[in-house]
Image (cartoon, rainbow, N blue to C red):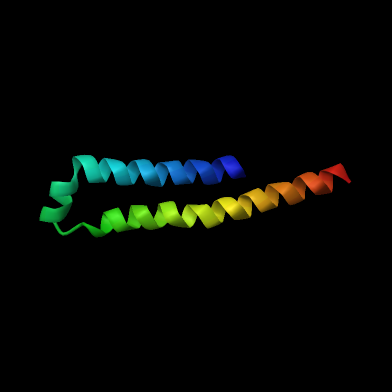
Length: 66
């Protein structure tokens, strides 16, 4: 499950950076600056998700070992 959480973190980070670097002017002109905040929120919420997935995987490994 951890790779899915990491992939989500990377996807939000890349989307945010692409918007910031290539579309910042367009976002400002059209009033879509909240898209950048959405990417930031997705990226930051990915860290608790990553922690949950790491804990889930650890419990699954312990169950399989016993």
